[in-house]
Length: 322
Ligand SMILES: Nc1ncnc2c1ncn2[C@@H]1O[C@H](COP(=O)(O)OP(=O)(O)OP(=O)(O)O)[C@@H](O)[C@H]1O
Ligand SMILES: Cc1ncc(C[n+]2csc(CCOP(=O)(O)O)c2C)c(N)n1
Ligand SMILES: [Mg+2]
Ligand SMILES: [Mg+2]
Ligand SMILES: [Mg+2]
Image (tube, rainbow, N blue to C red; front, top):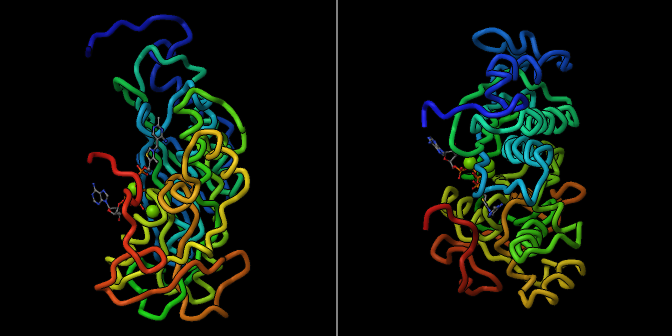
């Protein structure tokens, strides 16, 4: 495998590691927080707060995306978006990302470049620098982003600050990416609204710092599924959480798709991951910033995570290995 021949003039093997780095870094703008960008042993970025939030998530071909479902640009954007959602979930504002691309030698240069164009596009959309990365050979494509964030002088909003009596609220979409996954998995390509939600999320980045400013007591982004991620928050806070299903309005589009596929749209809303909505707890209803919707309440730890007072009897979200 180590000697696998490069084929074609337009592959990453032909252009080479450093040719590809040059192609995807030269001429790319950097925000003023990038003190030293790509080209040295590390980047140097400004951390005005003196504290840096840092996170990493990888997207693996066949596990997180398929190139017959998504364009490389969409995959690149998604790789950044899933990380920036984690930064937002701490109440931080993203400042910079680094990106590692692993791919087979026969990967067309255009595919590699478009993956990194997508990374740059989502980063630029929120004025974040792509300040470095790595390029390596692998048997399938893996795109790993690491993001840094500025807490703006505030304490991070962790998963562990929820207390019984707090209000549970969400901001952002739920169930759309799961509906898109169901559509794509059955070989369909429409409706484009849900399919595009699966291809690339649109997390409410600004809602994270807004929630922090409003005094959110705990926060998480919904990557695996609302119930699964609320269970992470509940475990960290040593509390229970009850979700009120009547607060979770199922969008008409999801009802239509579910009807066509014979699926339950509320199950997508409760357990679908990859929309990267933010879920947070607040001391009172009046603390919720604009755009946040109350969906439940924090209860005693013995209760666990429940829906309308009862345990949910299906899988609460995505799991990688079991
Ligand atoms: N290999 C690892 N070494 C150290 N910490 C890890 C490792 N993998 C995950 N973690 C940490 O475990 C915690 C949970 O990880 P997880 O990946 O589930 O969080 P997430 O990124 O918010 O979720 P998702 O991956 O579904 O987006 C995070 O704090 C993460 O940094
Ligand atoms: C080809 C393909 N098959 C399945 C899925 C569904 N999927 C993959 S990872 C994940 C949860 C978040 O992962 P992580 O915890 O790694 O952030 C979900 C819902 C997909 N997106 N693409
Ligand atoms: Mg992760
Ligand atoms: Mg997260
Ligand atoms: Mg994550």
